[in-house]
Structures are given as C-alpha cells and as structure tokens.
Image: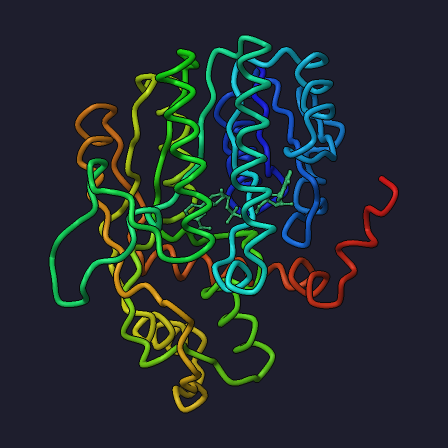
Length: 334
Ligand SMILES: NC(=O)c1ccc[n+]([C@@H]2O[C@H](COP(=O)([O-])OP(=O)(O)OC[C@H]3O[C@@H](n4cnc5c(N)ncnc54)[C@H](O)[C@@H]3O)[C@@H](O)[C@H]2O)c1
C-alpha cells in the first residue's frame, strides 16, 4: 500500500509517518510538504534512505506538483495534514489560511478524483464546532453544527464541507477525523505545551492568555495516530469521526502542572491580554469511534505530559535549531 502524507514534516504528520513505518513496515509512505515555517525536514531525516520512504517538497495548492506526485506514486490513499495550524497567526494573516486550508484541500480533492484515489482522509479539528460554555458538561458530537470562531477554524470547517461535498457529489471515498488539542514530540514551540516548556527551560516568564480558565481537551499524539490508522483502514466513506480522550484541562492548571514537573516557581506565570475571540471550552464525544472501530485512548494526560516534557529535555538540539533558524538552513537546496 502506498500512502501520501501531506504536511508530513509537521507535528502530527511526522508522528503519523513514524507510526506507519513502525506498524506497517511494508507500506510505502511519501511525505509531501511545502516546508513552511512549521515544517521541519530534520524531523524526518532518520527515515532518509529507509526502504519505502520518500520526501517530496511541494505545495498542496499547486495542482501541477500534486498531479505529478500522483502520477509518480499512484497512491492508494492520501492523508491530508497540510495546513496552517496556529490560531494566533490566523488572526494576523487570515488570507494564508484561506489559501492553504481551503484551496489546498480543494486541489487535493480534484487530484483524487482525477486519479481515482481509493481513500482521501482529512485531518480536522474540534475547533470547527466553535466553543462551549465553561460551566457546562456538554460535549461536541459529530452532529454538532459547525460554528467556527477564528479564521483558522473557519478555514478548517470550510475544508470539511468541501470534503463532504466531494463525497456527496462525486462519490469520492473520503473520511474526516476531528481531534482535540494534540501534544507530544516534535510540536513546533509556538503551541502552548512546547512554548511553555521551552520558556521554562530558558528561564523566561510563562505567558498565559486572559485568566487562564479556558479549557482544552488534550489528546496524546500517538493515540491520535492510532485513531487515524483505524479510520483509514476501517472507517466508512463519507463519515466523520471525533477523536478525543476526555482530558479537559484549564490552561492555567496545565501550566501549573508543567511548573511542578520542571520544578520551577509558579511565580514565573504571567497573565497577558486575551486572544481575540478566544474560545472558552472544547470537549469531544468520541463514542462513535469507540463503538464502531474500537478505539480508546491509551495515554492519560499526566503520563503523556511527563513523556512530552522528557522528550523536550532530551531533544534540546531539535528545538534549539528552530529557535535559531538553523533547522531551515540544514536542508536548504535539498
Ligand atoms: N496540533 C493540534 O493540536 C491539532 C488538533 C486538531 C487538528 N489539527 C490539524 O492537524 C493537522 C496537522 O497539524 P499540526 O499541528 O501537525 O500542524 P503543523 O503546523 O505542525 O504542520 C503543518 C505542516 O503542513 C505543512 N504545510 C503547510 N502549508 C502547506 C502547503 N501549502 N502544502 C504542503 N504542506 C504544507 C507545513 O510545512 C507543516 O509541515 C492540521 O490540519 C491541523 O489543522 C491539529
């Protein structure tokens, strides 16, 4: 089986590639990534030269590059992780998000139709559902109406609608998964957990938005990868699957947990002006995925957080190269 993983040099995409190579060693896996600021070619370097792995630098918005790739590889499936993924950046530059997340997905869908690809899987987010009140126990189900708040989530919701439209209109075999906030190894240090770890290790203050009471539903990235693998192989075309571990944590509590693990003074936490339109609470009901495909999370938050901190402590050169920009020059021209 040949699988193209778009956005494979990013956080979840690279974890998914490692997961595939470990659990399906006979598969051919092709990473297709434009290497934006968030893409890190160094992450995948351990696989260079391995049989059944190829890296292609390319843009999902470029129909010629995508067409060439599909002609060369004749893949059985495409898993689309490629996206602009940071809410704060979407508030500053929404146009980039519209282009990559919506037009890029449309380009891939057209190519899938043209080449008769047997499965297109779209990686989506719980943020397409909007947010929930802080004091409620309501969960998002797959039937919760889309009510995106940020340019990021609006662009992801638009992409999801396109994916569903290609199923209904053209019969393209698609699936969509919507997960909560992921954490684990190889996450770019602009996102909450690696940002706090890196700032803590550099002796800086730990900036928390607003009053820190916003709640996120955390998912260990390896649990997410296992869910995607299951959906890819056993999911029903046309269906959407929520992927959540029921690990709801307030941002401030998470940062306090990090202070404890890293043995640093909580006085380093500072509260900064809130993010515009900041979503209050996300919480996912993943009962459908459990009932239909037998998926359950294996890693609870405290264990996963400890593992993540350990990884950042052991891989300082990985994130140092990002902070200094050296990760970009490492593969320039390659
Ligand atoms: N990180 C999370 O917590 C989370 C949660 C739910 C859903 N998601 C979704 O999962 C996917 C992956 O997220 P992530 O956190 O790994 O993101 P990331 O920002 O770490 O990685 C995105 C990758 O996509 C690549 N990319 C960007 N534009 C591209 C383009 N035009 N063509 C080809 N490649 C391009 C980047 O170079 C990068 O390698 C995204 O679709 C995101 O919306 C993420």
